[in-house]
Image 1 (tube, rainbow, N blue to C red):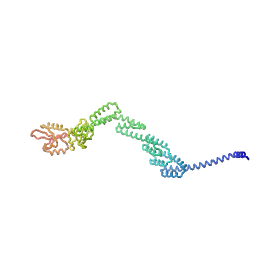
Image 2 (image 1 turned 90 degrees about the vertical axis):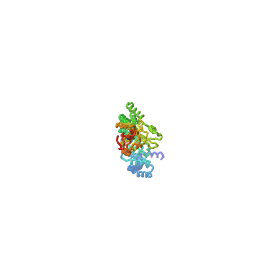
Image 3 (image 1 turned 180 degrees about the horizontal axis):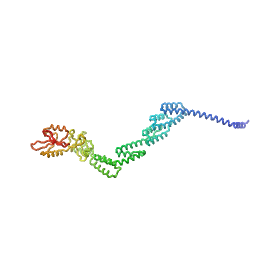
Image 4 (image 1 turned 120 degrees about the vertical axis):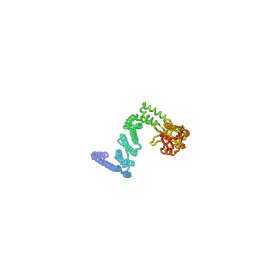
Length: 463
């Protein structure tokens, strides 16, 4: 049998048995495929089991066990199987991470739990976290805070915690900055409300102007409240300016005018008050240098040796400067300076007397804290002259003497010392010369109450 006949015979055999051959071949092929599928699925089932164990331990906060198991599997499994495990775990971890983020936002889990989860995931270096999903979640948190569906502390805490996920770097900074800026804007809005309640309208308006436009609700409220402040501030600040002007605080008075002038530019009342306060400021305001020059000139003391502590003091609606005067850092006087007349009044009472001879008068502070000015020596003499005339008590002349020299004109120094000590007041001493060979009469005049007393052998009597 030649080769051609042999080939034809095989072809005929195959043709007659083709159904059996095809069926058998398919069966063998199917068997091989089933073996492959079984091997693969068996391997996958094993990976699924272990990934479930790993994720369950993490969910139950058994972080150390989860990490130890993962390290053991890295040693035991082949590279391909470990890759499959990582893929399987990654899917479940990403779902767990997002779910946990939602739960943290809604308060279902604590910050410690959320941080513990992230730290564990970060330790699983070959697990792939879907950072895009986390960024989307952070964006939702930003929107929720803007819509006031969550509090600031929760929102910023979520952003800060999610930012520590491996690979996140600065990806959440935009949402963090948004939340911080809006939070600051809302704080400013609250402070503005407080200012408005306290009638500090200028401060309220300044704060309302700082509320961010992107925070739509509060921006609209701020503009509405600002308009209210502008309306309310007009009468209130005009009255405050008048009060400050009356108290001698001309700079403060002008400040109130400046507050409202911006919104009432051509208002005649405001312009008139501004002019008045500016005049008062120029006329009645003394600088430190002005005061030093005045004291130096009146006292004949070298200006360079003097220093002062000074502040404004209103007395009977008149402006004064209360000033402590130091020479070579030693207190040498306490004075009140009349801002209008520039007259200087030195402090003097029974307990405190700087013995100045340059002042235009004296003052003291009474027990109720008010200021009391002494009469001048000229006025004291005038009062005595009137008293003498009323009583038809004739005299030649009146001379003034110091308290150190009054003793030589009286015999009853004991009673005088006793009175001075008991009432604690300060007096002018006057000696009345009634003529040749006539006894001189001694009078004391209270420099604060203007009362006149006669000193004779019987004691001290009201005159």
